[in-house]
Image (cartoon, rainbow, N blue to C red; front, side):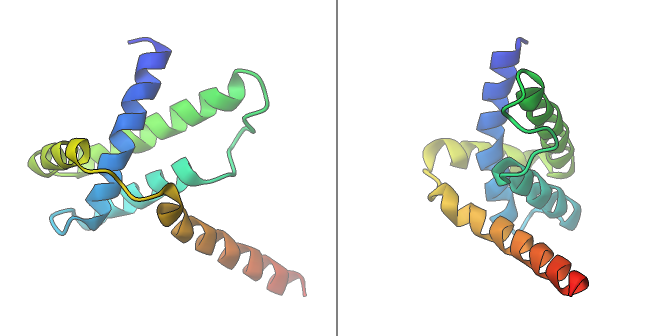
Length: 118
């Protein structure tokens, strides 16, 4: 599978992972990994900034691939297949809806750093 096809596959898996967060059949470990995956996918902060040629996007591909694979591993197969079907027929809300928890986490981290400095 070439790089472009793998990136497209990841793009198609993330909405199903978001739906897994809302599904009551999803276990704690799967929810934890799903939260990490969605947070990293929506996070404006990367391990290697995207403006660095090749490496900037390569780290996203590697980290997201590992996070998606780990998340899918913990979601029961039947649940994941039903989520993939639901994802195909349902449109997800705006990405901003899913960015709110990420923004809250970063705001808490920044507030803790500021409090530690003061």
